Length: 256
Ligand code: PML
Image 1 (tube, rainbow, N blue to C red):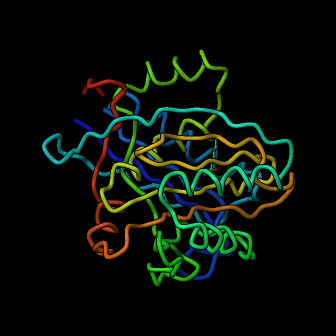
Image 2 (cartoon, rainbow, N blue to C red; image 1 turned 45 degrees about the horizontal axis):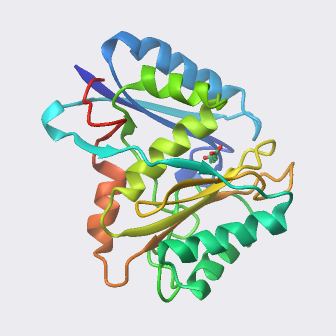
């Protein structure tokens, strides 16, 4: 049996009552690892760099194998950037290479830079015009119900590349689900954890490009912008991002 486990944590009450977003996490796993995963998520929500949560929601739901869609893991490459200016320049260039209009890429980046605090979800922007499309204000669209189809080999492979820790593990899976939507052109992201300055641009056409410096150390503001094909059906895209269970495959395998 498989389960989706979702955690979201906030300070000052629940997100829907105005609480400040602290942390979120998503896994899909079989019942063997369930208890440990729930306890790890609780621990993470209670001991987070962004502050101590006073609202923590952990939801466990069965996922039927027949309802799962499989998508491939994006290839990964690391760019060089010595500071935020170089990081942002690399990100804008990569967005353009992936098919986002320069002005739209700039608008998406400015929207992230203008945030006074992090959103719980992502902002959707038209990849040609740079118009914001989701209408969800400070909430954004949360990407939910995803994991790697073979977590053991995935983590071993990341370790072999010197990549340990939850940020990259989770971000590459999330980006692979997002890039797997036919409506998406590319994604821009950097973390809202004050001590984590790495970000990325991801697209199905070019893969996941890590950019080592996307914000100043100590900043608690980060987030995600998804650039969407002009004319795409936004309701269909949101249903996929929020509700479709997706397992990311490393090369065709389907073992959880
Ligand atoms: C987040 O914290 O949600 C974003 C993490 C970005 C990770 C980038 C990377 O290390 O590859």
